[in-house]
Length: 53
Image (cartoon, rainbow, N blue to C red; front, side, top):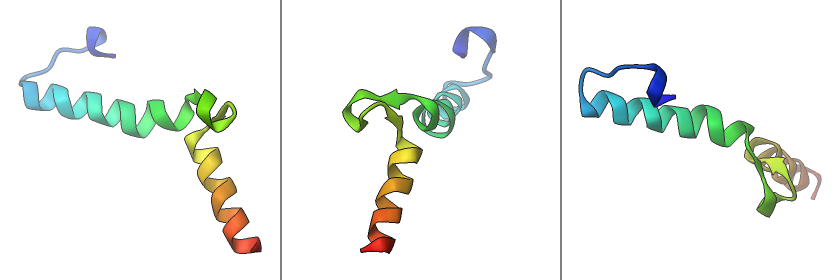
């Protein structure tokens, strides 16, 4: 992600990397600790289990 763009300041670069990790990457990456589902899918499962309990 960072190799394909140029940033005007370190702060802008840090923000772009943060957004990439938190908004795009973590929501799509499958986590082995979560039985190979995405964090969004896991969160939905938790909410559904709370609603049905």
